[in-house]
Amino acid sequence: MGNLKVDMLTVQALDRIRSCMDMLIKDGYLEWQGNLRDTYDKYLHPDVLNYDDDEMWKKVGDNAIPDLFQFDTPVGLQCAKKVKPSNVVELAIANSLMRLMPDNGEQPVDKYVKHKNNPEIWIQEMKDYGLNEQEIETLKKHLDEVYGVSESQEGIMLLSMDQNIADFTIQESNKLRKGVAKKQEKIIKEVKELFFKKGESNGS
Image 1 (cartoon, rainbow, N blue to C red):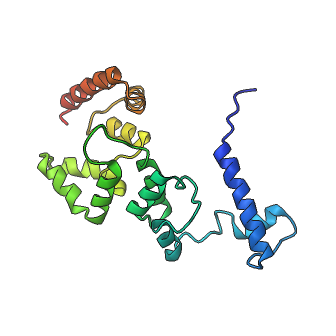
Image 2: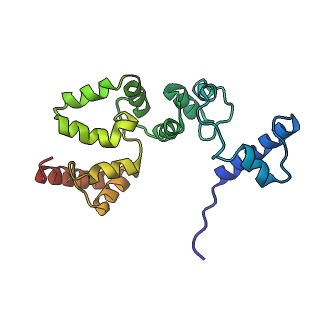
């Protein structure tokens, strides 16, 4: 039988999509295709949507979309306004960043926006830390798309598994991911020591 996960947020979103479709058909913006599936496939299927509409992305950044999925809370609205995403990848990154809260210091979303507006700041930060060109290129391979801000658990795992960083096994990187995600200080301390130990042993 297995387990069943019911995502009520998705159900809610689907209900809104259907209501929106009904209103667009009623007002003549869409034409009913005989059944729900064909109508959806013609106008709203992900494969036919226009993701390069500058006006749409401007509305996202201006908080002009009243009920944008995952960005309909005060925190989400503020994040969208800061990031001003211009494509789906940046929207997904913003969705991850708004969930990250540092113990102190600069908010991850603010650092991302700062680096996005001026990527040279991130490059200079790496140089200030004493990284050489090879080490900078290693980090750029993983973090260039997110301007130096690792926004996901998968990103942390890939970084730690890089042979030029700590060369973690998948089990070790997963332990790191769990420790960070659940803020388990004991695990984080253990993995931090292992991270530096393995990094030093392979010359990183």
